[in-house]
Length: 452
Image (cartoon, rainbow, N blue to C red; front, side):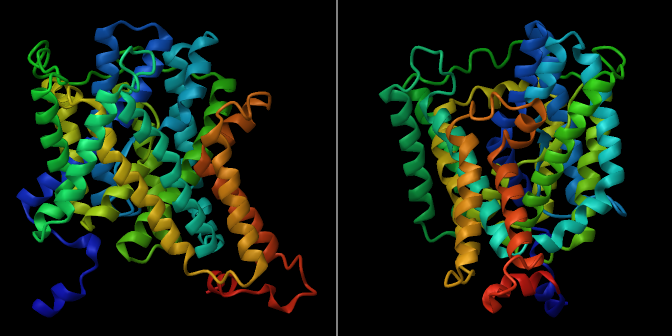
């Protein structure tokens, strides 16, 4: 029995209910700001009142929790069974806002999400075949840019979260974030492995207490409003199906599938477990199935959350059951608005201080993968340099593609998808299509690895 436990893959290890709940809460705190942002933005664009936006947020938490449980626990052919947190994808926000502001309304958004997700579900087994085009030279670039693309989020959190607020970028906000960062570092210097693994959660809790003492935290509104609220079916009306909206959302679906594939590969690399085309296909099916069901509860397209990949890396807690526990907490938050209000009351700079370490850890994981590459071969240097540079373009300036067609903006709005596409194309040119036939050194170890 002991011998069997030694051979069990890290993601299948069960740590017990208590540890799973504690580590799962860390995942929820890490992605909470990201999961409520899309419904907040779309709801504001539609012109919903505060109560209706609250319904959108509750639905996002509830569906995100169900999707996370499906992805981590899984059923036959559905679910990657990896520690991946699911939630409303930010990739579709611009497209959904465009749909609602051009007269389609939320009903057209929901209809487009349903059809595009079902088509994505059918495409999953074919899409997953691209795994052979993801050698270390590609995955390293993608993982690195996942981390780099998240760092601006952490920096905005450190500055206060709201650029229009008078205290934006104040010394007090940044100081609070740096104190939280200091707590994370101090907790990781302890010899107790349990404290190191819970360092993010403990730092956020201690940072929030410190913020409250210093007069930052406002928990006065936590008890206001309903304590229990069950999401209702089609609360914003039945979906309608408009061709232009569906086509726009289908492009978003392909981008989300690309990003989720990259996240599955990234977390597989961190966990140290095998990720093949079948596992990617199962993960994409979970993504698309939960996305197709989401509009029934009033939510939008689901995707794996890259920031939580960093949490897996920094804590070393690789169990999928931990993330499943986080999914259960998300479901509870969707049913218990008071818990959501409590977490929402955590000062944003506190999350920023913790996020700086989390997201930087993702980039560090990518750099570790890139270290496996032989840079004596010029082609590898070109692939890495160009792919990462292309991924940095939308991170540095969101308006770079503003004058391009909408489908180009949708495809390249994310540094992750930009890097992924560029790295795959260059890897094809250098390692698969034999563009440089005259140079015998062109067939690198990375290219050989993809053929096995």
